[in-house]
Amino acid sequence: MAGHYWDSVDLRDTLWLTDTASLEQSFATWSWMLQHVPARDASRMVSGFVSGLAEDRGMLYKVMSMAESYYDDPNSPYRAEELWISALEAFLAVPGLPQERIIRPEWQLKSAMKNRPGTTAADISGYLPNGGRAGLSDFRGKTVILLFYEPGCPECARTERYIRQSPVLGPAIITGRIKVLAVYPGDDRGLWEEHLPEFPSSWTVVMSPDVYSRLDYVVRATPTLYLIDRSGTVLLKDVSAETLEAYLR
Image (cartoon, rainbow, N blue to C red; front, top):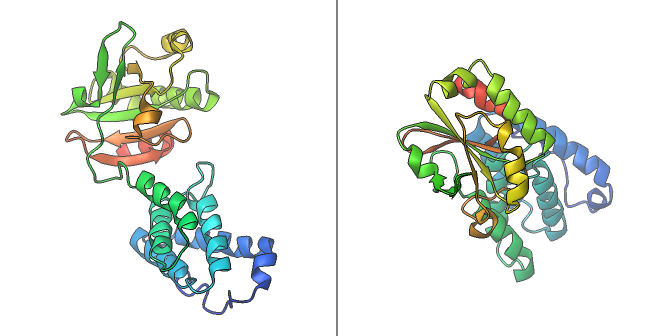
């Protein structure tokens, strides 16, 4: 069904461009279907759909706008980086696109390709409360939960609490089988220090003000969670604490 979803739809009909609600509902239904097929097939379907719109620039731009909203927005229930990468690659492969249309997608693709599951995690370090430094490379040989957070962020606090109270994660962290590196990517030292008592002593908490400028990690919303294995390979990227717990279970 997902593979043939658009077969009977004439997207060259310009009425689709004006009837945004119907088009978005159709796209949402298709995106829901894609969640229930193998990831490789879903990526192939997205790539084929975008490529098929190469001759209709108006619809191509409209679909890419929806793809960004559905597959890249941190708050979207359909968020799927692999689908977003497939859409971007197919879009950038369309010949003859004006330069002003490809600058942003090129940057978005470059950002999405950073620290993908299966690749080696970029090292990251920051200042400890005592003035020393600690980073990801200090935990080689250990499974690491990398958490980007903002002090005072309610959802960050909920995630931190969930990890502490998890019957799967909590004991593994306390016994040292899993390490937690919590990174504040800001520069307000007073705010950072004010919230340090909220963290368990078994966690390593650092302040790393150059995260946004270095762009080794693209942190668009907090909390952002990664799971990194003992060899430094990314296992999970930008997932919820619930997803992380289920994976480790």
